[in-house]
Length: 503
Image (cartoon, rainbow, N blue to C red):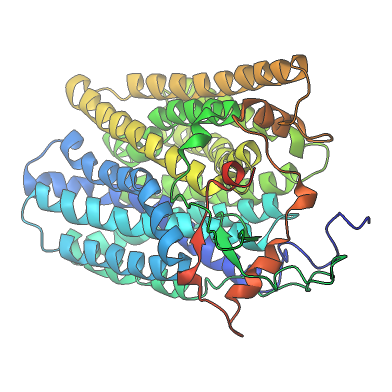
């Protein structure tokens, strides 16, 4: 390699302690995505004890998901200010406390505030930092790492749904909530292992004989990698806790609209599935097992899709693979709207699990490829906020339609149409962005040799990005964070607006 290129040993380690971080991210992702769906097995008991309708009870899961997504910017700011590990430890305590307090609730409003708001906030403070830390450890194997971490959702969903049914039958919903609150304390253990990677090899001396990093500098956490940037003498660059300039990125706008349309209908079939089967005459235990079938298929689909997306020929075209997964999921809902027998429901769960797993494995890889690693934390927070709005609209509206029409068929048609529309929009808009990028004259904002997705990103940027060769390695910056000395992770303040400030 030339002197300007990255040297061996620099960048994310793609292994080592990263496998432990990946295991912790696997557990956190499982709780974050599986928990709001798994507690739907308690809805019948809650409706009976509180005399409420299904739509009112479904707000518990909706508020939990809304807090998980809607507090994304808050989580980004807290990680920037305090670091991943302390934020995750506090989040685990909040998630556990929310479910424990919910076991003493006497009104639905109290459930909304405890199981919905408090537990949802705790899960959010675990979920986003774990993804950020995963990006610090993996780059070349990032699609596979994302797929393996995303597999935590189906694993926990397949385990938590039958576990919740057993807890409901033996201890009632109050005892079940209390024990699930204790189970959520495992998020604290996951947060405890989230230490930044160790330092890589020191860079060679430059022509002046000074070693890069010997001069006073500052570490800026960009979410998917930490980079050490030398501050000008007697000057410190202005820092931003949340980079709103990413909204002007054309690729980000396409992804955000796609995620909004997707979130309107993606979670509705999974949330309604158990009660739909019970109303069709399926025994309670068999109905709860349907979610486990989705989980079992999803377990295989996510890592397999992550490995597939990491192939050299497919990685530049991940947005189209993502749109194909969305279209398949929407068509599955549409074709299974009239499934009433248990065999037909099982077939639906298999097809739904495959497409749902592909969506889960690719969604964050597509976002990171669209905006780049430096702006990933801010982009993720904003996307989760937008997704929270969709979650507050989708499942509650579906529940009200069920109460009004006493018919699940129209719900599957509506949800399938929304997800399929998201897939079509993603493919068409991505193709249009690439055409515009190729038609536009090359300027300082585009880098030679970039992939199709990166070309579309560069075309939509308001400011040109610096060349990769000019940036120090991620691990050189992390030397300041290693246990051997230097500031701790909590002292590192992130710069999500790295691209804008470094120009």
